[in-house]
Image (cartoon, rainbow, N blue to C red; front, side, top):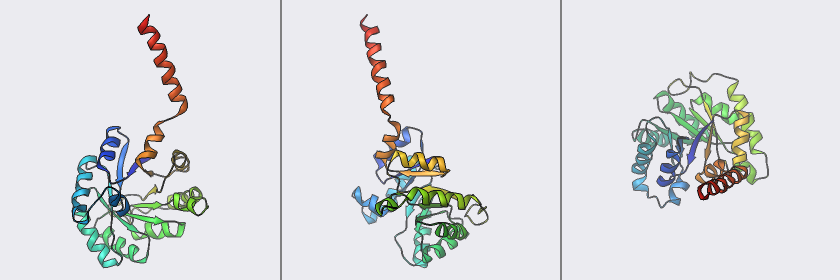
Length: 228
């Protein structure tokens, strides 16, 4: 499983990248607003993210347009920022049409706000390179988001969509709206390709009480040796 950091915070991205475990970044207007982002600096900010992670890490930048023509125009501008930009588009009729056009032009798309197998299949047929089914949003309404992601992983893996994507690559499923290390565990076991996680969850993934206990014991033993 690969890990995408779900943030627009440059310091978080730099820190996660230093661990060697970061495979990409996803952003959205809410995350950008949280760091005090301004509309006129959005493209420059995305460029800074691309520079930090390097050309091999995809960076999903979300279009805020709502009609197919506007999404396509927005997607083309976003794709000009850097070669590793992926245009993030909501799963809706206008989004499908825009995805079909952009994929035909060689521009990769991450279809977001996906909640069902039929939506995911339509996204894949339209040419989406990545599909982002959400977990946490299901949890918010007391439904099993992990089951939905598992169904989508199974359905997409039943077929070969390489003829549809921008560069002939297989569709990858991004487990999105991940809110815990357990979400990551379950998504990895069901075969999701990617988990997009906030920085706080990424840090918790490194931690385990037995590791902490082992480190504490190690340090105490070392102090005894050092003071002998």
